[in-house]
Amino acid sequence: MPQVAPWLIYTLIALVSFGIAGLLQKLSTDRVSAESAVIWLVVGFVILEPLVYPGSALRHYSNRSIAFVLLAGILNAAGTWTVLAAMRNGGKASVVVPMTAVYPMVVCVIAPLVLHEPITLVQGAGIACGLGAIFLLAS
Image 1 (cartoon, helix red, strand yellow):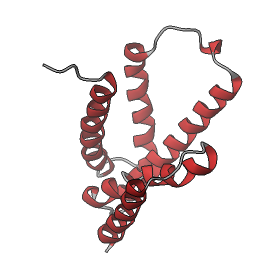
Image 2: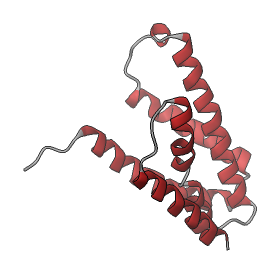
Image 3: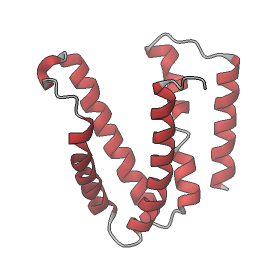
Image 4: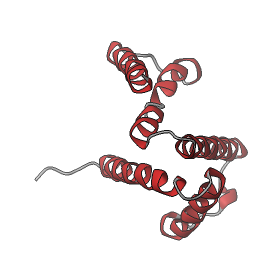
């Protein structure tokens, strides 16, 4: 039996986790505000933290790396809140979640500028398909 790469296992866990989370987010925003839901999501992160924290000192990392992670956390929180607000304000989970799930297109567009990673023809086609998916979902 071939060895499965660890990154693939993590990716599949993320896929299932995000998929179920999208459904649970819609169910929760039918009953609570988006702002309250974000707070409870943070509680969920805190509950999970002891299982995933590696135990190394937090100051072991450079200030630049910590700044990037903090900014990513702020943007993740903003994205999460706006997804919850969209569903709370009438957005269907079957539309909101897939539309926001094409966020990697943003990375594909910015990566060449910031990380100097070229966009391949296949990635360009993927970006075009993602834009088409957004158009189709929004109509």
